[in-house]
Image 1 (cartoon, rainbow, N blue to C red):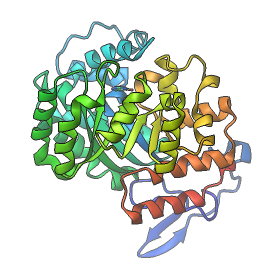
Image 2: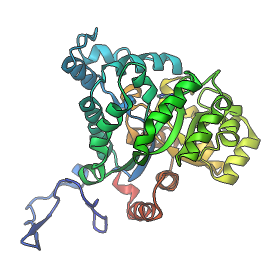
Image 3: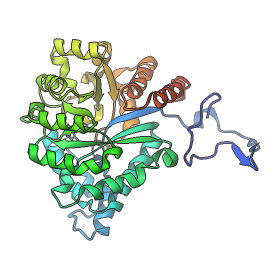
Image 4: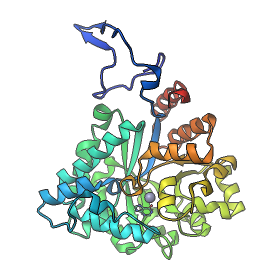
Length: 372
Ligand code: HPA
Ligand code: ZN
């Protein structure tokens, strides 16, 4: 760890030099031959992840292990065979595989393993704070109760700061391609867990399911004290982003790429500094952009929008959050200042207390992009 860098507080981080002995700090003797500069491991930039579906972190290896534990038949010989199915041409082709694969998740232990697996990977990719979506209706409709999902996830997330050095929050997403009544029921069943869930969101198949169908639901959620976010403008038109802002009164827009087709909307988003949680690898894998080079992220930044970079469903899209940062650095020519801007935006857009936000922004100030 370079001089001046603050070590993450709490957690079982590898000891890199200082050992506490009887209340005094003892320094481990220096190795005679230290690592050469070229061998020094790169340090990922500290960042918050704000658009991450926990069910989208179900790696094929874990899916197969959980299926076996629950004695469920999965028609794949091995993880490679399951992974070979992860070829998508649009959002629906992904959602079909996503819902089918998550059917292996049945017990609290399954959801705990899912959360632990994600946090392990997130820590290695520089995540310091994670706001994690989950899809309760997708579980309730298969007979897995809200309690199993929330208790399982919470058994790991409650101690994420201490165990992984990552603060975390839960965001409950409603499935926009199911009925309003089903979403209302999910909201009611989440009320006992009110203190564990910071916000509600809206996801699943977007086109044909505008935000305007869910006004009553979001009004009720807001009355209950939840913050609000919504996927909009991923595949759906810019009009859905207007609706999410004006009718659902969201604090952030998830994706939002198609705002770039609508100059008046760009002006509104810039003026109000509405955060957009953009997911480059997801956009590439689901065909929202044909080539990385065509991704609008740089144009969005140049337009003064409060853009963040996120991983969406990393087990399915071929990379976690730092892989997304690296992708845009390599293919869009993002410079160091823009990299720091994006990571700073992630903390600015997070549902953090002022003290937590200040702590993370200070940590970011101490980071040097040369360490990447
Ligand atoms: N969009 C909509 N719904 C989703 C997504 C997404 O990217 N991932 C999981 N559910
Ligand atoms: Zn998403």
